[in-house]
Amino acid sequence: MANKNYEIAVLKGDGIGPEVIDEALKVLEVFDYPKFSFREYPCGANCFLETGDPLPSQTVEGCRNADAVLLGAMGLPDVRWPDGTEMRPQIDLRIELDLFAGVRPIYLYNQAHTPLKNINVGDIDFVILRENVEGLFASMNGGIQLRGEVAVDSMVVTRSGTERVVRFAFELAKKRARSESRVTCVDKANVFKSMAFFRSIYDEVAADFPQVQTDYAYVDALSMYLIQKPQFYDVLVAENMYGDIISDLAAGLIGGLGMAPSADIGSDAAVFQPSHGTAPDIANKGLANPIAMVLSAAMMLRWLASQYDDQQAYVAAEKIETAVKNVVGDSKMVTEDLGGQLSTVQLGDVLVGAL
Image 1 (cartoon, rainbow, N blue to C red):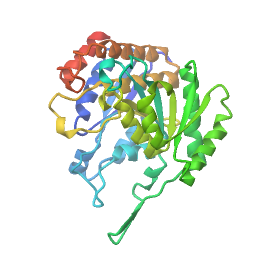
Image 2: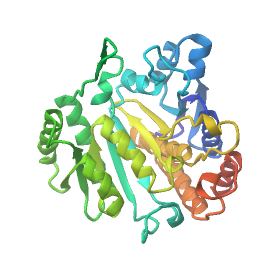
Image 3: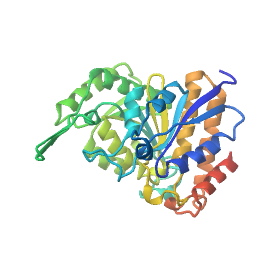
């Protein structure tokens, strides 16, 4: 669709969220096309402190009506509900928009950024698919605590929810088209009935994709395998909590969460955000790494390209990804977390100059 003006909802959030999202917007605004109209909406822990609501209804509706959503980061460790849990409006938004697929690419841009030996640029290149609205997270707002002695949360795994995220994983593996396309089922099927059910549905869906290899790993063993042989993995699909945990572990292989973009994707809506949190300890100090947010913006462009058959959006995404590869390949032209000396804004400026 040529010359479409994309309506993008912008949720800056808390902590370093506004800082990193400003750099992503700066990068997107370089392009004459695609064209964007950005509209900012209130959200997050600071929004709760000001209004009593961390995710106002007008924000949800704005996201629902937008072509896509860019989200910085939400929540602050000292702003909690009476039950002791943190504000988590980003999770509420996933449920409101039914964003069932949490897509978390893991790619090594610089050999110096991994703690592993004998690993080169591009050797680590896989995607974690996290079921995003069920699993243990389904207990959110619904767990119980009895008399200060016992607390119970429940794991929820449905056929429909599992089938759609597993199918998404196999379709993604086909699209990535590696020499050996593979989807790894990450579970704990040797212990939990819910996970044995998850695996059985994986097997049913896998039968529809004979060209994609199947693979299985218990989540505890996978934590070791990702360190020992990260090159082996292509696409991994997991229950919500397991996906949350292993994606943080995987980010540690490529330089940290500041290098880990993500997307929460549904049937007709999507939110793009870095995998990291709000990091209030470094907020407003110019220390935040904006790369994950910028790469999340590139993921947004790829998604818009597929949704609207927009080749120019795809080209813009490739230009951003190439700029990141060229910039991050120079170990000095990065922020402090990666051993450099650039501020958040300075790194954003370097990326703009590399486009």
